[in-house]
Length: 123
Image (cartoon, rainbow, N blue to C red; front, side, top):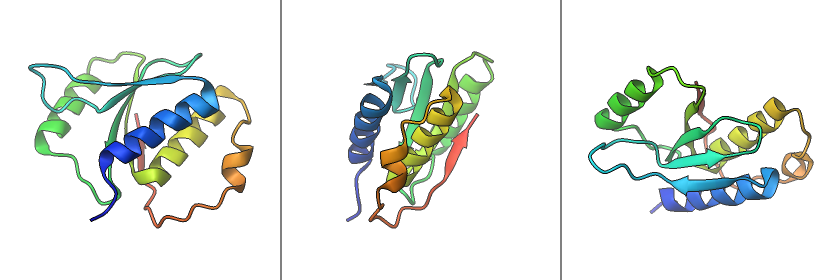
């Protein structure tokens, strides 16, 4: 059995706090199936809604439908799906770049031991 999504969610939370001093919250929306897993709050950025998947995970049809519905609202929020630990790493690096800070030095020098495929969808 591979890594579970909750382990990747914990990794996301830990990295957001470590790199940006930000916070994450598990998102549960009664009556609205398919919402993103986590809401990420980072100083200087709009809310980031993140769907977390294992490396070979796929969005369910209800998730695809709900994600498209939320994106159509045209808010300043960011919606994305990350796959595995490498997807989280790519997200952190792109947000670091977006904020114009270079706090990823330790991340860039760290060897990633996993074989995760990096797929990141930022919209």
